[in-house]
Image (cartoon, one colour):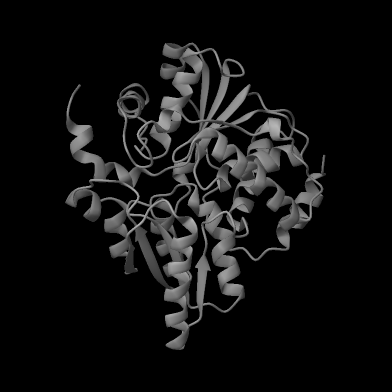
Amino acid sequence: MVSLPVIEAALARFPRIRATHAPTALEPMARMGASLGLDLTVKRDDCTGVALGGNKVRQLEFYIGDALARGADTVLITGAVQSNFVRTAAAMARRAGMDCHVQLEERVPDIDDTHRRNGNALLDRLFGATIHTFPEGEDEDAADASVARIAEGLRGDGRTPYIIGLAASTPPLGALGYVVGALELVVQHGGGPLPYDEIVVASGSAQTHCGILFGLRALGLDTPVRGICVRRAADIQEARVARRLKDMAALTGLDVSIPDSHVRCFHDARERGYGQMSAATRDAVLRAAREEGLLLDPVYTGKVLAGMIALHERGALAGRRVLFWHTGGQPALFAYADALSHET
């Protein structure tokens, strides 16, 4: 266990811009909770305030802070065509007075013109990002290498680029935003034990998942955190999370060691792969909208809810009191308009 002042001092060593509308609300999901037999709460990180919100705002506070501290004038990032990270990076770069180059990877097969032009892709263009494309979608290191080549070209033009790397080989700077998020959650509950048997959250790059888990364990809180896989199989994702947690301890200098048994992922909801919407995910998106007036997306939060429902039906949740950490992503809904418009 590490004291709160020590954690805050460790975080204060990193340059950061303040952009998140925080604390984000905790709201009961009473109707859905009743229908499932759960005491269900949602943390509204879809309402973080910048460019339609989402979890990436917390992460980018540290990336953009670091970029400014290094004198950068251009931010570079890679992600899927409907990447929330790319969209938010473009917006926050503009807020900071920087240009943004984004590389869009072909992660989702057989996408149509709506997918390529609407949702997050539309917002990237509105923010004036320079768009590059990358033909692969499952090779993070190759995607990062491609961005590095773009950055080298910019340096040749006299620019000072800053790369936000997404591969597991890069420092997990964005995860610090979710250490802050974990501390925020604890403060919202008076600084003591949390009233949840389990927290469920999307696990993709794993920085949100890792930040929450690291922050809670640093404070000595043992609430289980379940990552719902949106891209990789559970065993691969668990190994990634475990490795990134060690990276976080090294990055922060905090004496926090988290047993591998605390790293838990569930992959059944990813079913058809990244960005592909299964029937269960579609049903979860519709159910949240119609029971709670809550918008989820097909890529991340819809899969989280579908995974949570599947776990509950199998009796595999830790208990009845569940916190669903909503990480945003609603702009992607408009890229899936056709698939979501057809009634079952």
